[in-house]
Length: 389
Ligand SMILES: C[S@@+](CC[C@H](N)C(=O)[O-])C[C@H]1O[C@@H](n2cnc3c(N)ncnc32)[C@H](O)[C@@H]1O
Ligand code: SF4
Figure 1 (cartoon, rainbow, N blue to C red):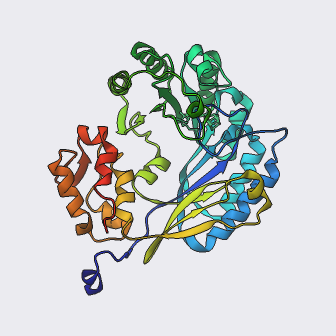
Figure 2 (cartoon, rainbow, N blue to C red):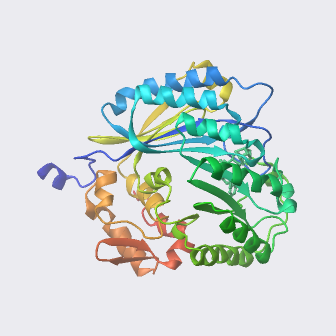
């Protein structure tokens, strides 16, 4: 205790945060012009078996760092994981279970593209142990999907949702808004379709133009800033009216269907990252580390270079925590900060006071949450917790 009083910036965990596993599968049929994820156009047959082998090699290298800890959720993301056969996903999950203790009721999500959705495939994923599907629908409007360079149209998106819902109760739909040529009423129509579809979770992201994408090199004409703000508001209103809870800036869920894996990121939990370019965060009694795998699939498969590991400086932890926790509409309980950063609670006090003064944050008994203004200007809010020398 006295040691901690001497140095409030010293990391100390009495109990480690919950642990999740992220698995990255880096291939897609075609690269979308807006996408800056580590995804690569497939050229011919995918090396599925070799890749699952490489994932297991990675996992084994990380095992000594998480000895004895249970894994609460698995997220197989991409890229387009639904390009992998059910047999490969089965081998992957069997390999994970053989090496790690997975909670019996662990949430296991697989990302799928509506252009690669078949009933038998989805049943196979369920048999392999996947219990949640996340579908990259983006829009139900053919013209919007074409503008986004998607490999599927609206009819395929509807079919994919039906096929996913036939095999899974827990289905998420990714939508994007603020698309080239999109009006607020078009965005509303997309939301209405998403609600009608029967999905239990909707993620609605504003299209952002990222460096190193085709859209960055040749920017399309996008709706005005105010129209995009109206679209976000339309999403909040329509989904609330349909019984969805808005729990994170972009995430909406029916009761009981919040994404446990993503909640663990937002609550600054720990996670292992395996697969090309995947990164992870792990806590130990006296420090927090981040790891990152080699990005290029070919280099990753060759296995010449281990994951890069670095310690997160204790001065960076308050900002990193807030960057995640303040995305949550309901904010967080004050005790979450010491539990997940290993730092003393007073470390966040100056930043909290400043944010309150600016009307970006509010405190009530047992809760610290962003105000509506704070949600809108989230980067200004989180910047108040940046380390200052
Ligand atoms: C990694 S992608 C995986 C989904 C799957 N590969 C697909 O696209 O069908 C996750 C989601 O991020 C969103 N996304 C990707 N790039 C984006 C961007 N530049 N702006 C906003 N959202 C984006 C899309 O909604 C996408 O479905
Ligand atoms: S399918 Fe998804 S991951 Fe692949 S390029 Fe398109 S948005 Fe990116």
